[in-house]
Length: 278
Image (cartoon, rainbow, N blue to C red; front, side, top):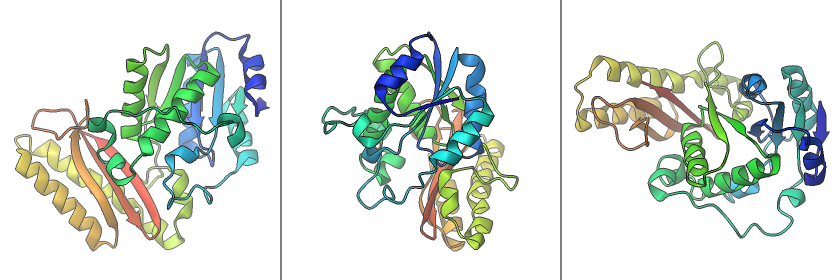
């Protein structure tokens, strides 16, 4: 496996390949990232992972400065998973000038759910993903379904810009107790880690109610959302949202739609997100 830090070295190494399959990450890798790398292997003629903690998608009060940087350990895991090339640029390499050109996704998709609670988040995500796909000349790129809204935003961006990139979603990887794997799980204390499964359990409860009540109207769906929020609050969480949405566009769901239940909540100082398709 080759590790490069500059665009010139990246382009030199990729010049012999026609179909890079790319897994963009912010590092601090877990089994979910490695599953994406393994999924990418048969989809291109070289498997590339990028590791870059993107300042543009962090609000001033968020954890950019403390986000774990674990490059050596990440590279060991990536090599074992079959990655061929890692691009780990410094911030000055990715943003040698202030990034004044930015991608602004449509408000109806990007200013709801995560975008409502993290204003500007998807501007930062889209801008860096567009740049990384350009840098790596990706023909296939893989993103985890745990970040469901992010995956949808990126798919729509690539489609609207007519980029020659196939966006592939990887299934959410979970611990044995059901907790969705996330780099931020490392922030949880031992006691919080035991409680963290309550988030996925709450989503399962909502999903099961949706499956068994196929004639639910908008008011019934709203009650399910409110009950789930209250349940998490009663358990000591601070929920931002529990939302039942259409899989197609993340707008409010109606009976008969293919649905997804999405949630974000804080447990102690750690904010976790998860979702389940119905």
